[in-house]
Image (cartoon, helix red, strand yellow):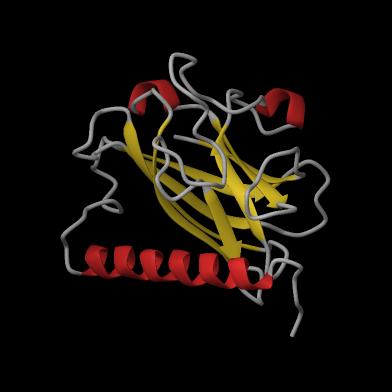
Length: 185
């Protein structure tokens, strides 16, 4: 089994993300949420693929929904992606760009500058559980969190979602490699 320098915090993050993701899947099965029906105009999806010279083969989906009772600009963010490094914690964010060709076209974090940048792995009022993901021993990354970037459905549509590689500490910060990208449609 591989180990990480942040094994305990990572294990806690992984367990929390997996429990939240499992609960969301169960709600979908019971018909309490209709996020996968294709008729819901409050949700955007991005097909995530390898980008920026990352050597792994990333494949999966990010779904962002703006049907949160906390307000039009508050979204839920769900990620399930394979092909990431095993046993890591990383960040996943909506970026300002609308093209996955390279980091320059992906842009930086996307948020309304009238509020604080919510795209950090640590908890904040704009992202109560942080905006990170964790992977298991097979490199499957999962995330489920709420966020407010100051924009609703229409202003997030067409923007890039970027998956960053491993963060150096559970507190986040710094620049981390961009390993996958998809466009919210």
